[in-house]
Image (tube, rainbow, N blue to C red; front, side):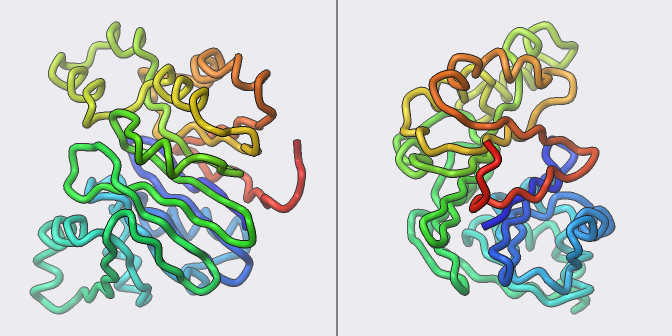
Amino acid sequence: MKISVLASGSKGNSTLVSDGETNILVDAGITKSKIEKHLAIFGLSLDDISAILITHAHIDHFKGLEAILKKKSIPVFASEETATSIELCLCECIKKGTLNIDWNYFSPGSQFTFNHLLITPFEVPHDANGAVAYIIEENGEKIGIATDLGCITNSVRYHLQGCDALVLEMNHDMRMLKDSDRPEMLKIRIASKLGHLSNDQAAEFLDTIDASGLKYLFPAHMSEDCNDLSCVKAAILSLEKKFDFLIVKTGQEGPTPLIDLSVNNL
């Protein structure tokens, strides 16, 4: 399998997972034009996208969905709660008949197959009904995509064991968040159990699971003003020595390289 984080952060999120035949977008939280621009870097277009998986119904995870589906009919997978919330946001287009969404509902915790890919959505604690993270597997390779969660649960710990590549929320440095000019209520929300993981929380989590096979760590949903890559690296410095994985920088400015998990780049 191959993976590229097309965009990550509060302004929009989208990740491409491909096995060469099936191309999946996990979230479509940036504009259609940006998704098309980023896909083109890898010789792909929206015509090559086989399905879209949505994690939850915050706008930075489905911003481009309406425009994409008006151009091309693509099956969309989500929890029923997430689908309902998105439809409420797009109700005018749906009522007018200008938008038809091919929803495919799943129950969090239940695996399903799409072409040759085995997909496991599982619940994460976040302030959005039906929020999930995803495991995508094929031929012994395992990708975990877990952003927008406020704390680590037993389910999160169980599902993210043994990943080859992991897109993991590392939203903020606690000191930078506390010292920021953000409203106090926003700081409380971000640091809550239904908010966003800090660098230290993510590092502590990684130290408690089987990460011996982890090849690539994508620190995700990094705050532009309350985090930076040096803080991320400082938080997981001991883990890099304990294990042997590459940190792949994510952000809003452009996609990460399309990394082939079958090729050893370590």
